[in-house]
Figure 1 (cartoon, one colour):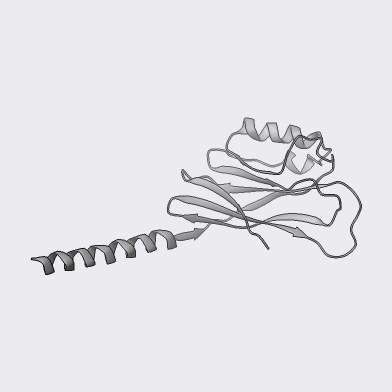
Figure 2 (cartoon, one colour; figure 1 turned 60 degrees about the vertical axis):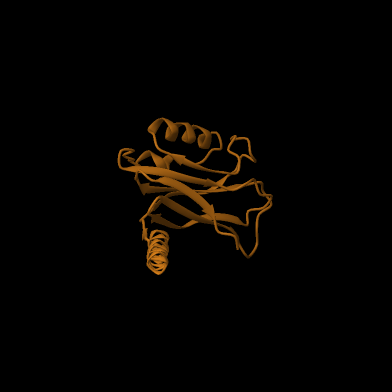
Amino acid sequence: MRMTVLIILAISTSYSCSVFKQEILKKNNIPFQVIAKGNLKGAGSEGVCESNIIIKTKKDWDTLLLKLNSSRVNLYEFSNLSIDFDKNIILACFDGVQSSGSHSIKVVDVIEYRKEVRVFYSKLELEGPSTQAFIQPYVIVKVPKTQKEYVITELKQ
C-alpha cells in the first residue's frame, strides 16, 4: 500500500511539473505596429514622466494626444490614424528626460503567454554626434486587444 501511494505521488508530481512547464513555455508572438516614435522636446513640460501607458479607450488616447500636442509633436502623423479600440489597444513607452539627443527607445517584441501579454522594450544610447538638447524619447505601438493582462518590461542592456 505504501509503495502504491509513493508511485501515485511520484507520477502526479511529475505530471504537474510537466504541465506547469508547458504553461510557462506556451507563447505566441503578437504583431505590433509602431505608430509613433520620436522625442518630446518640452524638457518635461508636457507632464509625461518616465512611464509605460496602456491605452484602452479613445478618451485616454485623446488625453495623451493633448499632452503630446503641448510639446509641439507633429500630430499630423496621428490625424489619419484609425484605431478601433474594440479590436486594438495602444502601448506607449516614455523614457525620462535626457540631456542629449543620443537616446532612443523601441519596442522589441510582444509575446502572448497563457495568462498575460508581455511587451518588451529597450532604451538605446545612440553612437555618433549628439545634440545638446533636453529630449524625452518615446515609442507608441498598436497591438491586437486580448482579455489578458498586459505587462510592459524593459530589457536591460
